[in-house]
Image: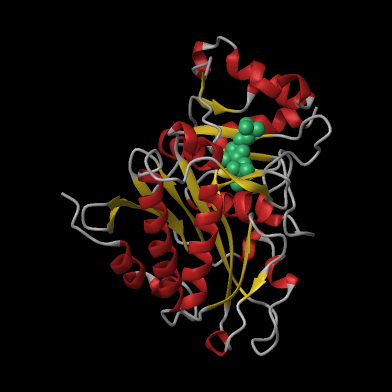
Length: 333
Ligand code: AHM
Ligand code: MG
């Protein structure tokens, strides 16, 4: 039987893995944990509380904001600014980054990027959604205002990243660069317990996840790879199985546990695809690499991309090593 360890205890026990740790990162996790519990509570009463549906406004990406997007964004902002450890935050729901500018934040070292509720339209139909987060050390001087450059760092510079999946149970999965660990929430006592230690994705899997409705708009390489997944070949255990939820965190989480590949490629008129580099792809790529898998844009490593803007998009191929490497071969044609 696994000894019972809470997320809070685990973070403190393992903080020697991050250089120069002074316990601040543990407190940032405390803020994320707290906000995630509030979001968990709202999601779980979604049908009976007035939290389902359109908030009546669009976000910066021109996407309809769900009430839950707005709620979660406010809670994460409030929790992260209250502790004085984070000097700024960028969110899918905000046009520009936010500076937390009070005496409390003077000298704070970290910035956070967040997608408060990814896949939020799935809430209305009782399908899993997630929160994705990414933490960096600021690069501007601690006594100056936080700058855009603090947020436009390459994914390789992430100090920590993770997600919360609000599924049949709520789980928080994170990495600080020394493996990936998962914690399951027990709502009856409000505690996350270590349930998935040192998560590793199988080298190869049988699941491919892509929105095949966009097939005719995909690049030729992706079309050929999808056909490859569907071919009959007992030696390589094909055809593979198609699974696509339309919630990145849920599709990723399943593939992480079972082995598989998730693809959101470029498509006609959208050369950069749909998913956002800084608060969707980079944190997921960091987790994937730490779990032994691969994340690329079809040609190059996601974590090496030099970000140019806050809401930048990128094609995304992520999953089991053998599968992503194979898919990349098709992209060379
Ligand atoms: P969102 O951030 O507006 O929720 O969009 C991101 C979501 C991902 O969770 C998911 O992988 C993708 O959009 C699904 O897109 P599509 O419906 O085009 O397949
Ligand atoms: Mg999103």
